[in-house]
Length: 207
Length: 163
Image 1 (tube, one colour):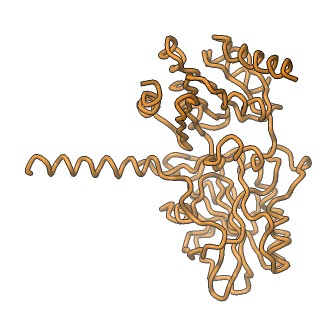
Image 2: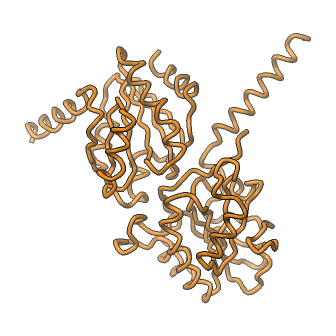
Image 3: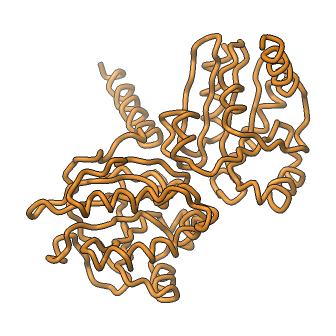
């Protein structure tokens, strides 16, 4: 028994560490799930929660970052989404989940600079513990979640991509997110509520 | 019709059988990739989806390319699928492949809408890079990894297929 205990402990450590490395990609929210609120630091230094904006009918939550070429390719489109949908009650909330130790260009100071340079008219929050990204099940940047208000709760109404052409916005044939927003704003469930996109892996903290 | 099928199969077989053609990069569409992933052979395929702009991909790429040498005498085939835009083929992908002197076959998947092709490659793929599939269709074995793999991890996972 004395010998068995350290062995079992080792097994447990091994099992836990492999769990961290091989975290299932399908964990996290599905459409229809209630999204938990969060409290994250914005580039202006203030803490932001979903509950803060009482007028919001919902949010377009975007996991994005400074460093990923796909995030950069979609940056202007994300800015445009905010312009279009904030006016209709669905502002963008951008969250950077990357560990700056792994992705140095994603430090809080770099985020501040980016938001200033590109004149973000929406919060750009640092998910320092990566808890929010894990809870949502975000795997990549950019990765979008549309939330709709139901009383004081927010329900996930769409997960996935912005459109079908990351390289060239002019060649886009299907605007997945905007199509979903049209349905959602009309009070209907999105007819296509889940789409996939290529992106950069979230830079998780090294275990 | 049968003749056509045979020709297509023969062409696919030839493409797969050509060894050491690493310096060229074929641009392929989804059906071609699907065909390659579904061949009912006892060859174990290690298919790595990467891009020149993806830092973790570039970091792990040598581990994959090394397998082509390490497993040269076994039925293991490494296929490196670049997810760079086709417009970057000559500017980025080919120079990268040359510079790294990659020994494994490199193709570029020329598709624009991930929402239509990702599920057809593998339903478990949410779209993050790097993504790796190890498969052996004769043994009905398939494993996927939506994460960066270390050399040790990759060896370990592959061993389970070639034993």
